[in-house]
Length: 387
Image (cartoon, rainbow, N blue to C red; front, side):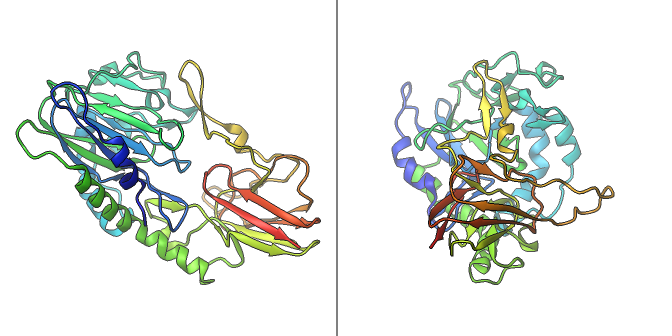
């Protein structure tokens, strides 16, 4: 496995201006040479800095949105989760709901609410006190972030948007007069288990980038183990699901703190007129996809919204119509046939909302290569070769 932060850190870590301030890089999310996917963590999850330094969070773009959110209120409410975080990093799964979960959920803005995206959480925000946070899910009054001094109740990067391979960063500048102490932070989309801590010290040891890289890789490898065990079984044909798979997972990975976003196998060989069927484990099937389809849209005024166009079927292909069922009853699995496809007709997508175990079939009527993707997760790609 290769943690991207190991590569980018040498490019991104540099001496800053003013009092010899330096930048240390923490990798947000994960990339591996073995699978396309996402791990919901900060690698490593602990860093020690001096006042005047910068912690740079470099986000691996996997299709998952992340924030870096901290403050005195976060430290207070996230403290019960720290023992759980240690267990997650050693086992790779979330096994229990820690004490204080409800207080945490009620006491901090969540990225999503009933109306969609909560702008308080999705946009940059600094609130000196809890009372300064909006109560109506609107954007904070103060969205220009000053250097963090440790007194703020709530201080957040907001959604870190895609900005190319060398972008996707959030620089947390520690104020020259920052109060020494340990500050907990988390991603307000994935919750407190995706968190970490920053220790600001005037006289203690400061982290070194090489050591951060090594520790980050160890943490990522441990978090990935459960998912990799499942994925390797799928590639070997030992999966709970048979045939062509769109997605990955079984009972072992239900509580894993991450996801493998793969088509297995990545290349399917078929004959003209042959029907190809996938078992969907979430995700979607999209052919003739655009070069880039953002999952979240940021409008000129900073509003963050989900790109609803990605949820819907396109190009005349059928999606999943959830069957009527009693509340609490798992939905009945469906098998849908999209009919004939010769590669023409522009973008084709079966949308989202699939239940693990649903099946989707396409009959290819012309020789050629048919690349496809999950439009929601960059890097989740496959190809059908028809002869």
